[in-house]
Length: 175
Image (cartoon, rainbow, N blue to C red; front, side, top):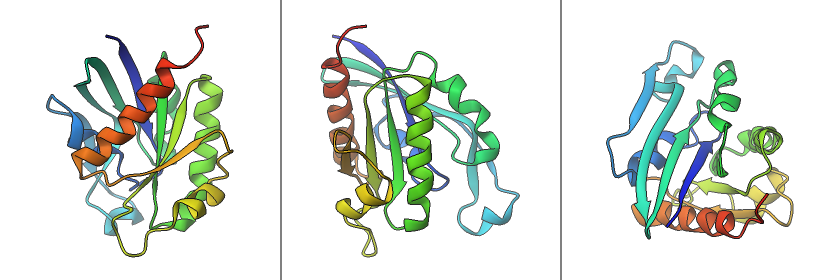
């Protein structure tokens, strides 16, 4: 049995906090604060430092660190990425305008550390969700990066994503 640090990142409103809350075995440590910017109409709160959750998944301990999605808090990204074993970039599949930001974030986190990652197309249950092929194209995901569907409010969906990243991390050549 192993333990893994997984960073959950993505743009504002992509579902990072919900993803962690849905699956964590412990109460999530969250730093959500009321939004005071023009994003106020989208949702009431945003993560300003991190979210933290932990779970046991098929005997492995996963430590989940959610990043803030707003660029003004991006100084936390590198801090949270220290010693990560893998990362997930969540994308709101109903917001095609955020796809380029997802591509940039995936590149940024890849530069912090060369670890496995997935592009996670969240909100795929909504009628205006983009197809996975459109998410792959819009996020410029290379052929060796898995793009997975997800519904962050459904435990079984979040579990499938985590099983996939754990498999990639376990198959990562030792450095």
